[in-house]
Length: 316
Image 1 (cartoon, one colour):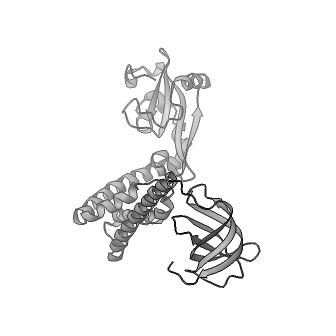
Image 2 (tube, rainbow, N blue to C red):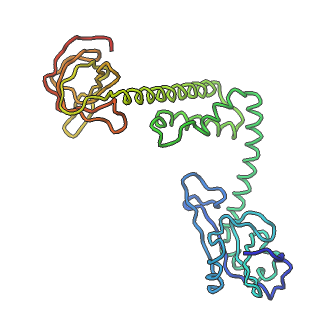
Image 3 (spheres, rainbow, N blue to C red):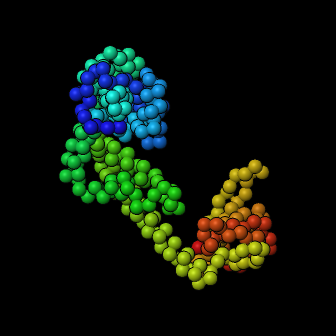
C-alpha cells in the first residue's frame, strides 16, 4: 500500500473499488475496536474485483484490523480497498471518507450491505467512547478524594502475580471483586462504606497470601537444596494429624487427612475407617507415598496400615 499521492487527487477513472472489509466482534455484536475479553475478531469481505484482491493480498493488510485510512489517518474497522490502476498501488479508505470519494459513491451498496447493523454499531461505539470519557472524569475525582485506594485498584488491575502462577487461584476472587468495585467507581463515582472496607481487606489479605507463598517457596527451595524430601515409597512414618475432611466418591466417601511430620514435610491421604481419633492426634502408620510433582516436601499416601495412636490431642 502507498500514500505517494493523496487519493483525493486521483481522477475517478484511475480508481478501482477492490473490496469492502468489515470487522466484527464475534458473538458480542460490537465492532472489533471494542472487543470484550475472550472474544474473537471476525472479518467479512465483499470482494468486487477478485484479480485485484488477489494482488492486494500479497501486499496489503487483508484483515483490515490495524490499517489506517489513507484519507484521514484514522484507524479502520469498516473500510474498503481501492486500487490506483496506473500504478497498481492499494489504498484503504474508512467509512467516514467513503462518501467523499466520487468513485465509491457509485458503490453505495456497501452502505446497504451493513445496513441498520452498521448504523447501530457505530452509534454504540460513540456511546461507549462518551461513557469512557465520563468514567475517566468520575474516576479522577474519586481518587482525588480517596487517594489511599489507588494502590488497591492498581493491585487488582495489574496483580504482582499472573494467571498460571501457583498462588494466583488464592487471590483470583479478591482481584475480580476489587475490579468490579473499580467498575462501580467509573460508572457511579462512589462506593459504599462496606465496599471501602472490603476492598482494603481483600487487598491486605491478598498481599499476605502472596508473601506467605513466597516464603514457603524459599523454604522449599532451601530444604530441597539440603536434601529434604517428603516420604516416598512404602514406608512407616510418624506425624501429627493437622486437618481432616470427608470426601465423597463413587463408593460413598472416605475421611482424608493431612499429616505433618514435623520436619517441614507433609502428606495427604485416606484415613482408616476404623480410626476414631481426630485433629491433633499423634499417629504412627505405614503407607505408600508418592511425591507431589509441584512440591518435593509434600506427598500423597494410600493404603495405610498399622495405624496407631502415639499421643492424643497433641498441639496441631
